Image (tube, rainbow, N blue to C red; front, side, top):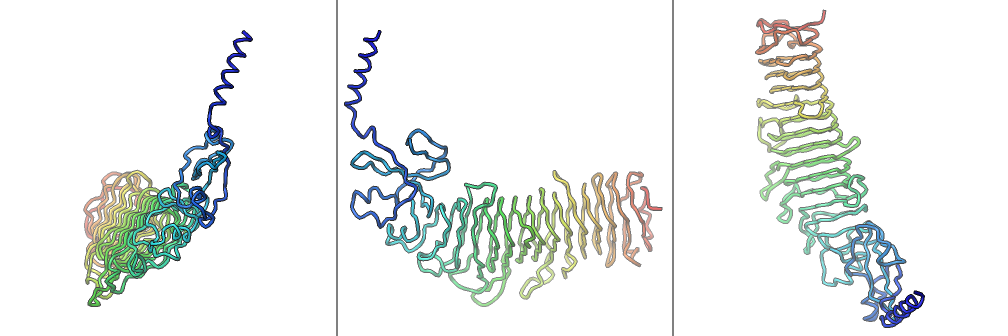
Length: 460
């Protein structure tokens, strides 16, 4: 037995002596990456990592390059073996990646790409970046990767330096919920006419902090998903070649966006805003037509919608509609509108609970279903209360013209039902449950001559 073991050991030793030395090449780890200027000879250039294709490490690897450890979430490049068979591994921990090609700085990118006039349109950050020497692209797609990208003048982009940046797509794949990465978008004004600046900006951001967004002129579109913001202002007032001002539609969509107190202000005819699972300060939508939708677990401060009464706007334009299907809203008011058009305010619980403060409209159709709402004032138009277990403040109706009240809700509570002072003749009741399920609080219908009140309980 001992002879057989000895023979096997000798045979293995003979095999090992036949292997090339490169099979036993040492592996070293270099966390400090050299600059391109250090590569003066061809062999050195071959080992210089600038511009080389780095590989993303999806899982920590302790074995393949031992004693080096390849850490999850990092980018690595293995240099060719040197004369002694030693392999150096470089980690890219600064600069940016274009595709998988790594550059430690904008200057190093220029050194490798001397004919480039415009910064790459798609890249991944490995450190904070402000584009200075090269022109910004007209379209941008970037993964900030936990870092900060600071943009400068969006009206001075492209190879000619005077073109508009029209598209910004930014995400933070490294931090899908932490809003760690940041993009700084400067105030952009395209309200005056310029043949190079006739398009708005489309911003599509995911999992980042976008700070303050302020876009003026042309049609702008902003989509924020799981983002943090300071404030959002979008204004479509735009002059054409003849100096005539029109109000281009604005588009805002947020989901999972948060702001401690940041206001959202939108101006532009036909504008739309959809806020889902969003926390924000006040929301003001000025538009002839258009709509505002609030849902999910949103928490929104006072909402004001009104038609566009600015110079050159369409006279007596329609008031934007408001729909709340989930969340909390401090108040809804469109009483500042100057129009004969009727507005629509719909408060209708679908999945999530609704808690809305006071609702006021000069003229319109207000409907509430399965919700908690404060005082409701409809000066002219209609009010419908439906569903079950509504909790409503005081209804004040008919101040300026005919107002129709329809109540089909059951097991609901009201603080009171009132005709505006001296305006009971403007009130019509089309539906009122005959059962005693509802509590209506104080009933004050002075001047009302109909016989619409049929059932319920009231304050003493």
